Amino acid sequence: MITRNGYNKLKEELNQLISVERPRVIELIENSRVIGDADMEDSDYMFAKDEQDRVENRICYISNLLDDSKPVDIKGHYDNVEFGATITLMDVDTEKTVKYTIVSSIESDPSHGLISIEAPIIKELIGASVGDSACFNDKEYELLSIQ
Image (tube, rainbow, N blue to C red; front, side, top):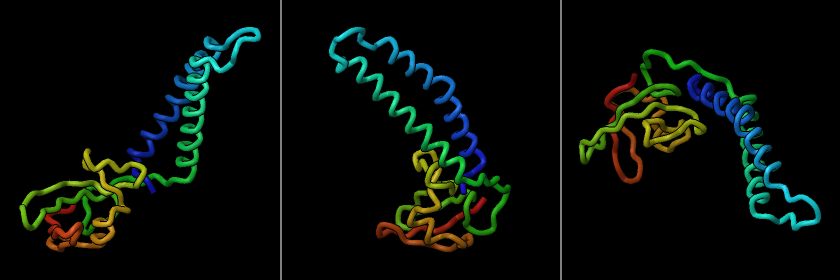
């Protein structure tokens, strides 16, 4: 399961890798090849081959993710904590709040407000309603809102 937005971002990255990065790396390899009996351990050539491996591995990885993922549209409103919901949590001790959208582990980026459905605190909160609380890292968090 992946959000439609995350799925589309992966498709865009795959297209970029195939249409831009792959040709760039092929050109890099062709331009760095040593002609004749020279040592093929040329650093430019080795760098180009490493880049090719990186690009091809990423293409394979993303292709497999897309094949195995089912994109899910985010609903406008949620009554309970579930995949796609945006939640606001408050640290009971400090009263500091954080807001997260629950996404797949592939899309997770807590610094940008995206938290994995596999995160321990989210696992504890699945199915919870506003006003419920959960503990994580010896801290108690209250669920203030679900969108």
